[in-house]
Length: 228
Image 1: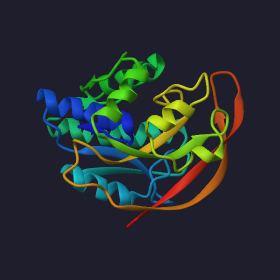
Image 2: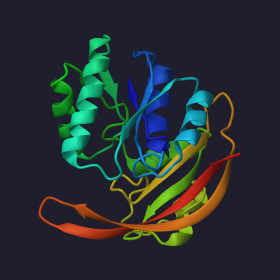
Image 3: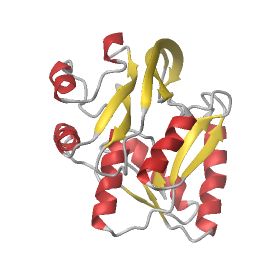
């Protein structure tokens, strides 16, 4: 089972797994909002994610959650989902994480409870080199969400290409691993055909994000994508 966000890191990790042939991917699992029918944090419409999965040739398995779910709800729903998958004989859960140790520890701890093991195909690889690989291998993506603490509104809706890389401010991870931005991949070597989309409006939303010791208000610019 592959944990799928629809973005560049997921795409690179999936490409790596498919090339190596060590694991059979039965589905692309993603979390989505019950109210909005969009992918959590990325804001991509579930309908467009379905078209993306169809272009890849793997079934999409949405896990539906409330908007900005509390950790208790997230753990409960995801725990039930993973337990059901484990009961069907699935033993590995694959992620596109790169270097966030606390997130990896959390994932591995949750998986242990359902007798599953995490697999991280691009773990500890250099972010800049990964993004260059992404571009060189022919992947194409558009930025669908940018964190205003790191990037301005003009980055929302931009293509993830060499021009984007050249314009990244200092201190921003090239793969957005710290939550600086999120992307939607619409073409590349894992796709049978490109995913057709139209660019919609850019909207601004502000959230209160809880950290280990404090809560901060953080705003995000979302570029809406419409199925074409």
